[in-house]
Each structure stands twice: as structure tokens, then as C-alpha cells.
Image 1: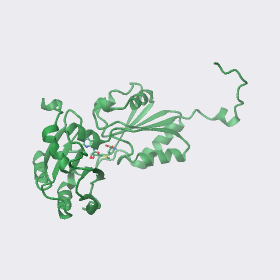
Image 2: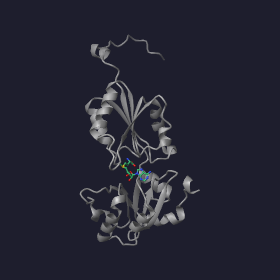
Image 3: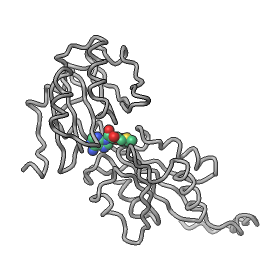
Image 4: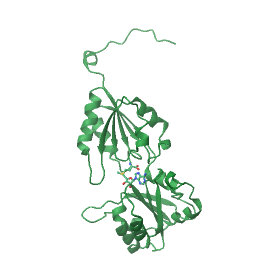
Length: 268
Ligand SMILES: C[S@@+](CC[C@H](N)C(=O)[O-])C[C@H]1O[C@@H](n2cnc3c(N)ncnc32)[C@H](O)[C@@H]1O
């Protein structure tokens, strides 16, 4: 039924104000484009401008509409193309100018992604936004490496932590991490791998606990190096791995021997 009542009177401010834009904070998943959500794809197609991180793969960027302006805002360990404050300010500026702004982040925007800070700024400026969850790297990389993060015979809990160093230290609660029947997934931990393995052993996990590093999980260049807390640092060093990588610690890693199903394009 069509609505036929009198038109609502417009206020003077509503008439004068430029149409406000909005921001879509979208998780792009771990790299494989088929792992984008349908909502992510819909909003990607609607965007006027895209601010994207270094983790967004070329295959995902290729799905953006040609007319959309692309702005690389970076963020690797030593390469911050744009500081967080500048990113926040740019989101506000473009939305206030009436644009539909896509903020595209690797994995899930709320998992070690500073997405919370970005929408707090938008909220403070009264800007409309939407958050689209993505498959976080831990879930994508574990699935494609054939490592179930929980398994009733091996692990009843799983924790996600960030392993980057500050002043030569990794500030983690090692006692809480070194619990039996628990899987640990470490983001941003490759440089700290020897330290992480050493601390977990010192805090009580057996040297023989399974451990793996997954590089570029879910992508055609995925590599997986497995071992134990005792052997993994040397094996990873020999494999000459590079970011992005995830470390998985726990006896679920051993299941990969039977459950490995994914052959990356480059190894076919
Ligand atoms: C700043 S965090 C962002 C995490 C992201 N928001 C998520 O939910 O996956 C970046 C880290 O995620 C991990 N990572 C992201 N994509 C990955 C991938 N495809 N394979 C392995 N690790 C990945 C790496 O540890 C990388 O250093």
C-alpha cells in the first residue's frame, strides 16, 4: 500500500545540511576472496572510496568497482603508510563530504584490528556506520592447515593472543597460556617465536607439545611448518618464513598429519 498522508515538514537544518555519507567497517577475511561474506561483497560494490590495509589481497581489491577511489593506509610492522589518527580523520572527512566509505580490513575488524577505535571516532562525530565481521586469520589459517582448534580429545579451550615485542619483551600471561588441553593462537608473533616457545616450556608445557606456523593462510602461497615447542623455532628459521604468519600451539596440531586437505596452487 502506498502511503498518502501529508508530507512531514522538513526542518530548516535538514534542508541545509549536505547529505551525510556513511562508513562500512568490513572484515575481508584472511586472504582468499571466496571467504568474503555476502554482506562484505554488497558493501564493497556500493563504496565511493576504499581505505584498505596491507593485508588485503590483490584478488580482493579486484572485486571493487572501478569507479571507487582506493587509498592504501598500510600498517606493516615498520611501514605505517598512515597513522591511526590520520586514518580516523580521513574516515570522518570523507563521510562528512557525503561519500560511502569502505574501511576494508584483513580478517575481522575487531580482532587485533583497531576497528573499535575507528568506530568510536565515527560515533563521536555522529556518523552512521556498519560493522561487517570477517573470518579472522586464526579460523581461516587453521581450517586451511587442517588443524581443528578445539577437539574433544585434545583441547577444550582456545585463546587468541598478540605476540609482538615491546622493548624486547612479549607481555603475555604465560601461566594462563601454559594450561593443558588449551590451544593458543598467536597473531604477529613470528619474530618472537623462540621466546614464546621458551616461555611456554618454562611455565610448564611439555617440550613435545605440538606447534605450527602458518604463513599466508588460505592463499595460493600458504605454507605450514610443524614441529613441537622444542623444535619449531629452528624449523621455522630454516624455512625462512615471512609475515603474515600465525603460530598455533597445542596437541591439535598433530591432527594435521591426517587432516591436511588443502594443496595451495603453488605446490600443485
Ligand atoms: C594486525 S593483525 C590483524 C588481524 C585481523 N584483524 C584478523 O582478524 O585476522 C595482523 C596479523 O594477523 C595475522 N594474519 C592475518 N592474515 C593472515 C594469514 N592469511 N595467514 C596467517 N596469518 C595472518 C598475522 O599474524 C598478522 O601479523
